[in-house]
Length: 314
Image (cartoon, rainbow, N blue to C red; front, side, top):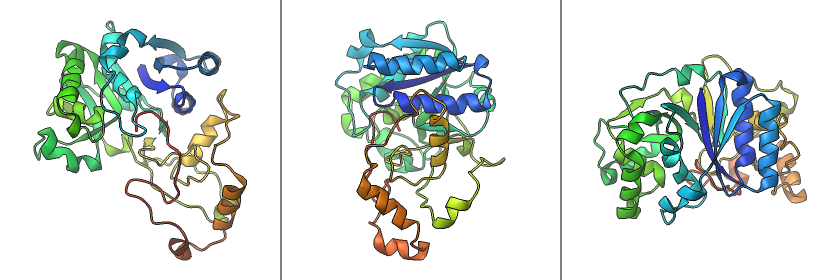
């Protein structure tokens, strides 16, 4: 199975955690992992490489330096930096491959990936999960009521289709011509260009975890174990990032569990300050019915507490 991810220096750790979750459910010998690397420091890349070698994952690192001029200048939005546009280049970077499962670095597998990869996309450009935020983009992107706006963070790509139909070139041309329509960067361009040619996948393959604060009782409960019938994959979209100390998110513990198995296990969140440690500890003793009165009102698409976000897709 061809699995790919785009990552820069800030997100390579999270890419390693995603890969750790992947191989915890799937035999690593079945995986050929393609890392589309964007300006990653040698020391950081070495840690990732050592993790892959130790885990018996076949790794190919794709250097995109020569391809960067194609995407430079395209619209970026907050944590959606130029790295998100690199997924468009995967088909041309892998001319001898016909299928690849692209996963954002801020995803965590909760079950074996074989079922997802096995979907037949021979008659489609890709397979993807609808995104609930898409309604706000329909009219602007030329989508009709029967076309579902999809989230591009989990994308089962028909690489032959992308190459034969010049999808990357069309997306880039649309992005240059209509930057005002790119509310979610490359995701909007892909939705416009691929409309009507995407196989709809079940929501369980791109579940968006919600803010979920813990109470004192959670300290004495058993660690969470993904249940049969639940989501197969958690995607920490927006500013809901589990690697922030103050973040309390569904399946966030899964991130920390898999982080321990990587070469990045010494990571300390920048927001783990004495003040925040006290704040987080005190919250455990506040009954849930009273918390709404003492915490900030959540921002649209974000958690109650401000959290540092990274610089990759999702």
